[in-house]
Length: 613
Image (cartoon, rainbow, N blue to C red):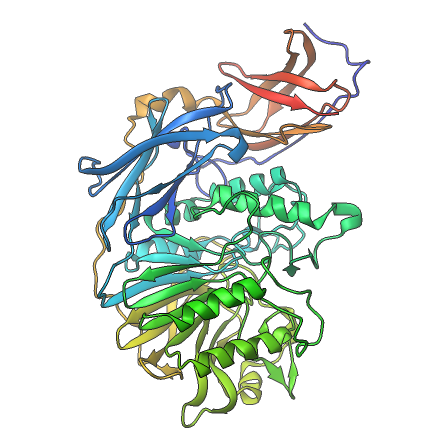
């Protein structure tokens, strides 16, 4: 029955992506119903976080049971732990569990199962315990979808010579489509608007996590993540952000809550009590090193632009500052490694700081941290930094710093360039040689390339190995090693290495690319459409349907109230193969519960909707 709509102000908006293959911006039907793959993170010596996301377009309940298991072999025969839980609509159908009872310094394989379907198997590794000779990490930051292909992730996935990925922030970007973009075909943000609501952030994470390179990297290695500013909004701080306008975008506290909730839902990170913003934490790799992951954005940062010598201004917040200094003062690790967002070493020209968004804008607190390190005789400080879209190796100088004698430095900083994001404009075209002239503590710069850092940690030294990709405008264009710098045990200055540091360990085989399910199990989904989500839900005025079609197809959207009465019906004659985002304007419906039935030629999906006034 066709329903007259004169009594309802209901409209529909459609946009889509066409495509002909599964990579990059679509889903692989073989992965049903775990299209976003699997991930692991925050490894301890006896446990690790396991993550997945359930997507089923026929499910009508608010939750679904998910079974998990972890094994020492790819065939999932030697199971060492298993369990079950629920993926729930309130967490955007994501599911994660802290898998415990594991052995230190051990590679494992894991997978998930629900409704008879298995996810792809993932591979992960626990941290070592006690005496440990070495650890090795891939360090990345600043992965903007619209500025290029994630070639860095692809090359890292294939290396198979490190223990974990450290992502120092800007895992996603908040901008609207075209707002901060290189204009590359088929690299468009979704949703197309600047993300503000919880549903916006969730869709953006979903969009990123369908990227095959990112999904594959998550599958094979544990991640250790912290956020920077773009997971919420550019140049964020406790009470606001440069890219947030309360008059048009609402309360910053609401947006910050939305951003952090989606972050914890979509990443394999140990999550605090709901509403608690704390993301700073420590992860031990035996006696060799302690990794302190810090938050210089949302936890305590004062707004940029004030006097750097003002004792009331902070970049960490007093609680985090006290936590960090206490941890450093009581550390028994050989190396103390800080993973954080913005450059800690000074960056000046003619004595003037170039960027007050980094620690230069908070010099009083930086001096307090340096004083604590020096006063307590804390050695072997290494700082890992992202944010700035360029590469640097810095000594961390005190006022008596002397480069020639390697004195007056509290440690070494390795700044990793971006995965795709372009170099920053505040440098104003200043050459690296000019910067190094005014800043003798800077040992190395690369101000133009995209790439990653391989951090090799041993008992005698820490080495940062800089690798770059040839291009991000096209897929897999090649990579190369450029430079490596090391700092010796007991010293605080960086020295250039003769070449890259090679791994002394051989990880086991990769987890298989496909799930255990046979192809017959997913035949029904090869010709069907898939609904990834309905956002927001509950809703006030409009609902966006995120749907993927394997072929061009007409869809019908029928909305029923709780009495079974059809209150809205609309047929779209032809939607394009690929990802489609369909916005239904349902503002004139009465508040209450509804069922939205989406029908194709051979398939249908039913979703519960809740309408608020």
